[in-house]
Length: 85
Image (cartoon, rainbow, N blue to C red; front, side, top):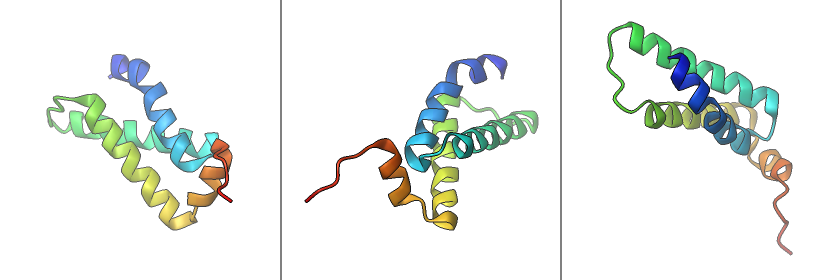
């Protein structure tokens, strides 16, 4: 788990941050994704591809967070995407 966290945390953070546009919220999502990963592995579930599992969980948690908060536009603005005229 420690190895997965050290190697995969930056990727998970970038996924969440791009979707949410806020570092503190992205950190919360990443923490929750790793907690879920840890729970699954402690329960005996073999996760053959931790990167794929964590990417999917991080993405889904971010989508759920945005659905509750409505952050699609603010995340786009935070990334500095150009507006179309």
